[in-house]
Length: 165
Length: 470
Image (cartoon, rainbow over all chains, first blue to last red; front, side, top):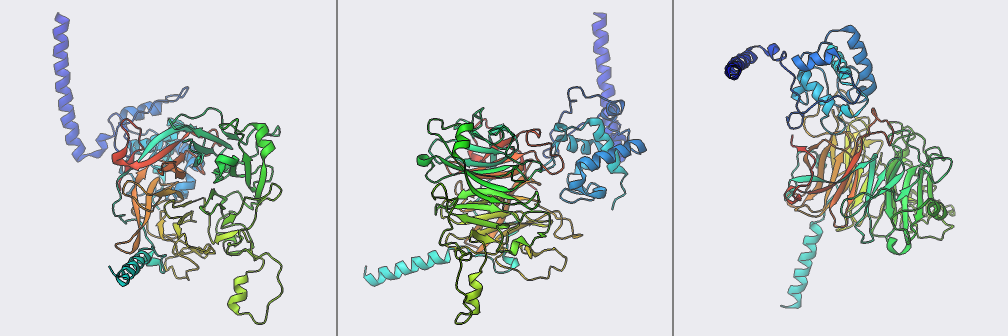
């Protein structure tokens, strides 16, 4: 019984803390977008905004970087030269034909600058969702291809490293 | 009512009928671009019929009353979709294994493969089917072949039957591995029409578009109702039917127009030319008009239209023009328009190299799907873009006396082709095959077959493709 009441109390306290945290987050988000990045990643469909899941493929490893990204929305590979180099190789294998050298856009839209075809691409969680889940036409879901989620993070780190043309 | 009044009324009706005919644009400003609205057009939906196809790149409905739909898989197989949506496990036709040497189909590049199947107008009686594909043993040449279905085995052409009944119709050497064209279909005239691209590379290095001595860059028209030892015959009404015939020299007593029209040495199979890559084209079953979806170069996709009254011989301008624009496309766009303008066009990401980013519907490869005459649509050519997933409709607006290009929304699909089902509804197929991530015709994610219906007619519980309006 005692445990029960303690649990209820704890539960109420948790809700209170959660509510305060949420309010704080909402307030902070209105003044400091950087703070939002430290939240658990919520991936959404670029088409209709519906939430999407990002399960790993059979045998695919959840690297520490991927785990951190999903927990915090922050891409640990940003600015990491080694990861950027690997991301560039991924870009040249899968993306360059449509998005062109320097990601400035060709058949596919530009991935640099401040304006994106899909606004969610402006942040790494949104870009991850577009790559993983696809968008329209030839921008297919790369989760169906031989590319890992960790490679998607490295790919994003490369794209973010490009100076807007 | 006096005879005079009746005659006057008839004349008036005839005049109205004559006026009601669409017209081909005579200047670029008359060519429709995205932003148009087709009067009476409903909101459209794509309803899934079946899936699990390996790179489906063509679809044709059987014309034998069976309700079967035949989906061509790029690898070299034709799959049957039954009326209930079930897909027959065994292929109807298989070009990959009738020969111990291996497949007959070249598929190394994503534009290669088995593109289309056409049923002879009298298929029910003679069992003739025609296919068009890139041949591996002929080093990637375009092959049009005829096979005969054994009436005792209507759903499967066995290896033996395939080999025994094979008749070569046409072999067109292919200089490069892209811009093949692909679709073949019969017109109401009983003749076989073949869409043939400019043979590839980029920018038409062979000048095939304007070369009448080549089978490339054309819609070809041939008569396949010939004896078994005659591949095909040139229809006498082809625009260049006599161009390859030996003729007496005529220099005097003939006008310049006269000997220009002779076009000596031209390929008599030509129906129309100046097309870059007419992968798909469709007749309007209501009136036999012809629409051609011509895949563009870097900047513009175009839809061409020929009235049923056309005698052929249209020049659609490639490589001088793409759409109503110059090729190469430039900012000043200052060049002559060669031949016949398209009725509609839409841009890629930029209208010319270094130009402003396109805002609104765009694409990079137009695929014709079929002419819709249902649900509020009339004489409307539906097309989908392989790259952007946009679904477009092209139609003449009699009230406004202009062509409209309406965007019905953007899908997640890579459209590859389409056709009509037995009820006249437009079908579409999509693949997950593209230049960069092509893992081969059986390794790519599976594609699907869709039926395009007015949104309000979607059957309860049916799976529909997401469409967003932009």
